[in-house]
Amino acid sequence: MQQHQPDVIFQQDGALPHWGMIIRDVLDENFPDRWCGRGGPIPCPPRSPDITLLDFFLWGFVKNIVYKSPVPSLDELKRRIVIAIQNVTPQMLENTWREIEFRFNVLRAMKGSHVQIH
Image 1 (cartoon, helix red, strand yellow):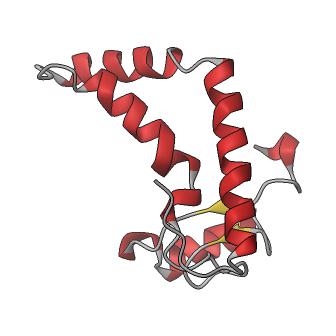
Image 2 (cartoon, rainbow, N blue to C red):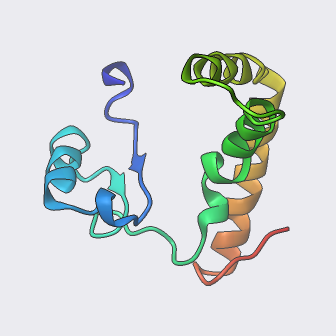
């Protein structure tokens, strides 16, 4: 991650465990004025989880592969996660970036108000 500084902006959700002072101190130290989240220097757009790549794409893709059938053990769970991530293609990532750009444009046009994209 260090090779990408200062271009990286860290984004986190507002879950209570992620909002503690110890977490915010770590983020302030590692991403000074460059983290987005509850209580952070960059406010997250309200009610817009659909602009997060992990929320609208990656977790669903991974879960579909990992939980296609019951997982019998922790080792099998780890194996399936690795396989799922290995199945993410460059074309899929390119399409995802195009989609996030579209979502940001909608958010800009709505001036940060509630966005619901289906």
